[in-house]
Amino acid sequence: MQLFWEKGFLGASLSELTHVMGINKPSMYAAFGNKEQLFVLATDYFVEQHGSEACRNLSNAEGALRDRMKVYLSAVADMQNQPTLPPGCFIAQAIGESAGGTLPASALSAIKKASEKTTSFLNDFFQREIEAGSLSDNKTADIYTRYTFTVIQGMASMARGGASREEMDDVIDLALHIFEG
Image (tube, rainbow, N blue to C red; front, side, top):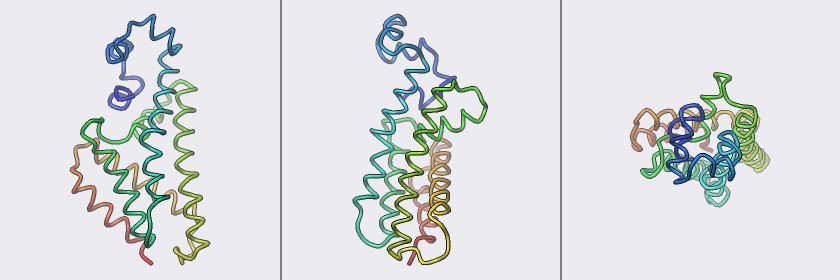
């Protein structure tokens, strides 16, 4: 996962993948089928190990919407700046790579599925917030979802570009103004 995260699907060679896994190419093919299937498994692993954690943080956070969103966006920024992981976001990296039309079908499908999982979670969250009166203006849950997803993707680009966690906090603080009651 980390090699795909760092170099993308196309940039991660079979030799590098087998080296970091400590296996040879025949073993990789026997265990995973091919590079494409390994990428799909890496994507699923990322979602469960890293992407879902921020969603759990938002679900478990208490207080005003702005405070809960700060917990969520801070968890995302923490993951995107974790010293033991490549900077940015695995999914954001793959989305950028998919724009070139060079990802195999199942890899592209895995990325779309991961993005849709986040989008669906956020859309449901914001719909509940609208119904609870936490968001009082006339925007839809979809607009809040797209806004939040854009902030997350932008933070991923910042992290990949070497922005500090403090610089990302400045962006989070500005982004949170939309959630003030």
